[in-house]
Amino acid sequence: HRASVGGDRAKPASTEVRPIAPCEYRGVPCTKVALRPRTGRRHQLRVHLAASGFPLVGDATYDAGPTADAPRMMLHAFRLALPA
Image 1 (spheres, rainbow, N blue to C red):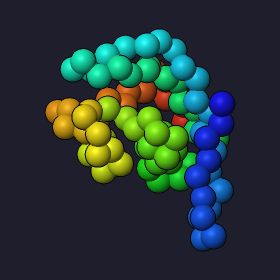
Image 2 (tube, one colour):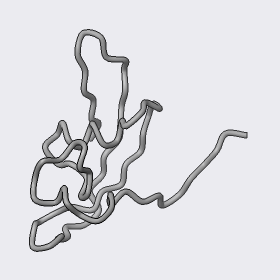
Image 3 (cartoon, helix red, strand yellow):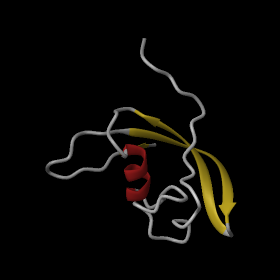
């Protein structure tokens, strides 16, 4: 699944989203996902997930739901690759 959000002045941004496993945070159903940004826009992963109705747990900026008050944002890197 690819996510994109835009308006008249938005720059193109694309994120590949792949569900991994269901989970739970403080009794709230969640889903662990693998995210692959196809472009490099600031806050892109956070914006795309929030716009699709599934904000990151602990993202107080883009989430007004029951998981926004987590002590930290639950965004972790599995692998990082830097261009040579």
